[in-house]
Image 1 (tube, rainbow, N blue to C red):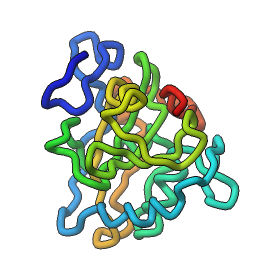
Image 2 (image 1 turned 180 degrees about the vertical axis):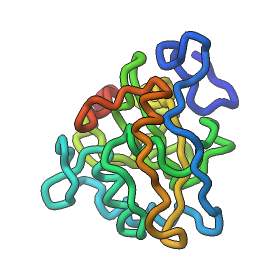
Image 3 (image 1 turned 90 degrees about the vertical axis):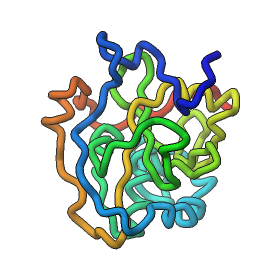
Length: 197
């Protein structure tokens, strides 16, 4: 088991042949006057809401990116609809516990597949997300046995602003995603493949 300063040791299958991690999009500068940590109390309100593929509402259920989009929208931040598109939002953040801040977005892809899942980093080595394998909105500890899937399959971390930046901080970077080798030809996220809790 690889345990080091790197939070999310990346599986070789999630890398380009050169060994570099597939990074979706280019960094998009955002002011840092406000912390996205303010979204966590909002995110926690929906713990227990069921997972629903394509879901965007607490009334009917959320998929992973629908949940993230909904939570950030409550704070005036407009994010794209899918995890692959959300991987272009904000600024790139290194995948280490020391660099991650509460409210950062983490994207996951298994075995070189397209990005299929997104979660909000909640601090203390935990994520909050709408998990297909976990049947809905929940916390997961990245140091647990179940958390190993997330550590091993994390490919992108992004930092977006909050209400202080308002709308328009996100660009549509689908062309850049394609140019970076990230597949964007799936209409919605397929979810995480972590072991069931």
